[in-house]
Amino acid sequence: MNIAVWHNLPSGGASRALNQHIKGLAERGHQLTVYTTSMADSAYLDVDRYVTATHVVPLDMTLRFRHQYRDQLRSIAYLPDTQIERMLTACAQLADKINTGGHDLLFANSCQQFMMPYIGRFVQGPKLLYLQEPNRSLYEAFPKQRWAALPPAAGRWRNKAYRKAFWHDLFEQRQARVRVREELANYHTYDQVLVNSHFSNESVVKAYGHGANVCYLGIDAAVFPDLKLPRKPFVLGLGALFPHKRPDTAIQTLAQLPAATRPPLVWVGNMGNREYVAEMQQLANRLNVDFQTRERIAQAELVELLNTASCLLYTSELEPFGYAPLEANACGLPTVAIAEGGIRETVIDGQNGLLCPRNHAQLAAAVARLLTDKALFQRLSEQGKAWVADKWTIYQAVDRVENELQKVLNNQRYI
Image (tube, rainbow, N blue to C red):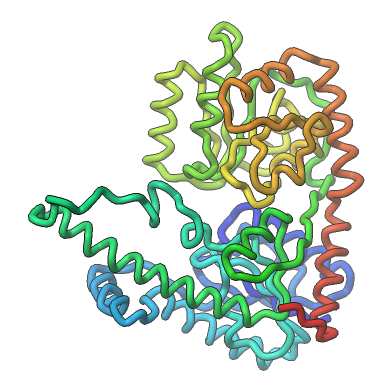
């Protein structure tokens, strides 16, 4: 197949998944050309030797005050905002290249700005989308984000600050409704949508009213080998240093362990919010937890940490899939994870790790078991490696996505 690959991804799990798909498909003889924007982290994707070419168009989502004022006015008439218009322009430019590139089909991937990509509107021919997850901020009631609860209005209208917040909220909600409308239209431009877990499929059904096809990802054991290194008494956390990865849960969990034997928490993330990192450091200091952060570390260092840690504590909130527990398993490291989201599909309690509710005391007890019960650690370690080798290899993942691409090329429309 001659495949046009579109993405607008940062560094992280979704980009790593696309990297593996591109490499695997290229090694099977398929021809791939990448189309992306200047916002994407193409260096992290690192597939130049596997693709025919990479086409990049400029894209800047920075808004000045005049743009924000214009968007507020446009929201009154339910018109698309500036960022949507910029994305539409970028996608139209890339689609002109795709439509004249002689490709058999489009393999679109998630967009870091909108999640549901706009490129499907402009590309002719068969189209498949691998969507890591819907735009959660549009469909979930995050208490401190877009759908935050508001105080009652009684007696407050004379307050200038309250009036300002009222109008800001009104404009923001209208803009959000426009984005929901536009995302739903985007969803229906694809012949098939793939997701990484059954949990993600449920999220897609709730967001767009129709489902997707589960196409599990995989782990490259050559990239995450078991080096048989001595284990050290520290707990590892993985994930971008943002609130939804919940390092606060990990810190509060370790604070439940006795101070004399409390292990350090080493947190590895590819990016982070500086103010939030400082907030987490203050929390750790207050609770007497040794909280060490490692950002954008080299692959070799990550593998060494996975091979020397005594536990992976995975605390992400409603993680759609989560590479980290499987990467840890490939390196012989069991996971203590919260039984939410797609993690319930990759971590089987008592087989390759321990699952708990989001309860600090129960999580701490599970961590303590792994740190002190050598027989349990060894059993979960061996079973975890077998679990990855049996179901979660990169070869199986490429098989799955290749089969889905072929189905779409054969005009087996699903949506």
